[in-house]
Image (cartoon, rainbow, N blue to C red; front, side, top):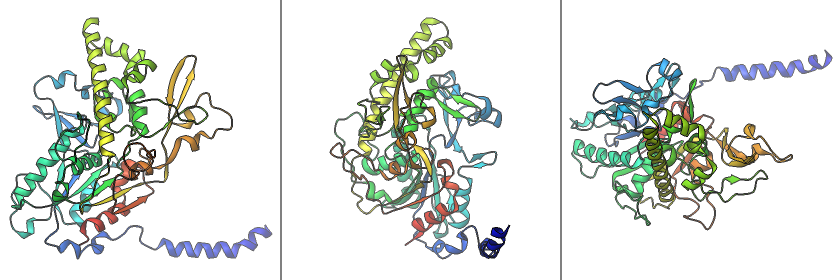
Length: 456
């Protein structure tokens, strides 16, 4: 009791200090901060590129929404309809992007960001093909909606076409744009800046493109896996959990993007139980087949065959899935190598924004038990660990829960292999305590974003 009384004056003082702090604003007043900047008549238009699963997918002919669907679909569907080999893709119409996936229930993904661009930045959402009418119509933003199941090169070409159309709408063939890219969208923007609309992934040499700086002024990469994410490796083995269900491996394997966000080939991230590097090529289809991982797991093969119209059809579908898996792996390897090449900025200002307060899987341990090998990316999943090995420190690094800080910065390449240590001359970087899917909502990110975009 005496100890408490002696501490009471200090507790009261601390309470008064905290009470004083409690009266301070908890959010920046963005409208007041950027009121003057919104009067700039020369502000370039902004193109927003969403991340993986960041747009709705609807049937072209009917408008029926297959992703994300209603709350019931989110809670109970395993989204087999999204596999490109399903019937919905073979009726002529297929699935196409509808609009941004703004949010669900009380979880916001892009709505707050859009409000900030519109209400604070005074940008108006425009559709390509609408000519600018007067000086008051120049503050525009566009949304690049792409089918996030397909290879990123398709979205890259969409971006090129969009920029060309925006130039025509503005009546300015030399107009540069600002690009705001979230997550996988950053890989699309990065590829475009380096290589433009050309597909260089079937080549042995990556010929750079010199036009990027003539089309982009500033580029924002938000939570972008510049060196990939080990969680993509986990997803291609187990599927991805959404709400109460899991999108199974055989569906996920038909998408190209989970492969294109695999860790960079130069990263030595597969370790044995002692923490020593293991020579294992995750981009080699033989690695997956021999270890019976992903689509080669017996239970996955059984599901694919069982869902077909008879054993022969099932065998053919499984063979087609294997071929798709192999192609995705090889193209993804080339993509990561291409994006790892150094790029001269030529005056383009590139900013990196992200999160670094959440311990995020960064490596994988190769375990073997009863003749079965598995890759484990989370310390709590280690079944046969060695006493004294700190698997938490071994496997986890600061990040946003999906992408490590090092990957967002393009750091961690093995010296002497591939390209240089840093593949980007970043103009600035800013990190905060936020998880991957909430980065765009954070008001402090929005504050720094507006400062970067609107500064003259």
